[in-house]
Image (cartoon, rainbow, N blue to C red; front, top):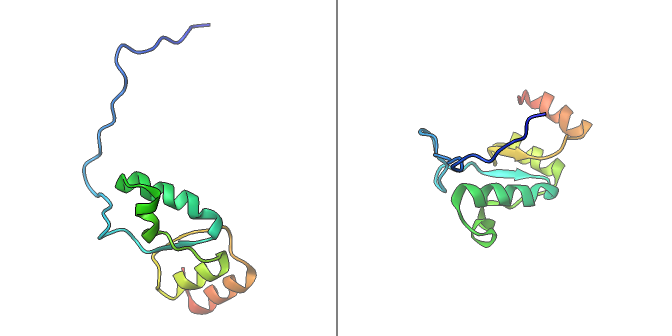
Length: 97
């Protein structure tokens, strides 16, 4: 069995060209309260800021409410678990995809 040898130089990461998130173009987000730590960590990485500095970007409600907020156009991105049957029925009634 071959053994892995460390490379002579560490791999470097270069930022891809194209779209970059900024505070001006970051989508309004909502979701389940359980997803708050994950959303904060994503924001911390995107903006190279502390948890305290990104706290203004992450104000999550509970799962069911976050779906209604999304369907009514008050947020652009949802980070949540699966919604309940009531929300699915409302989604169908609204024709929301």
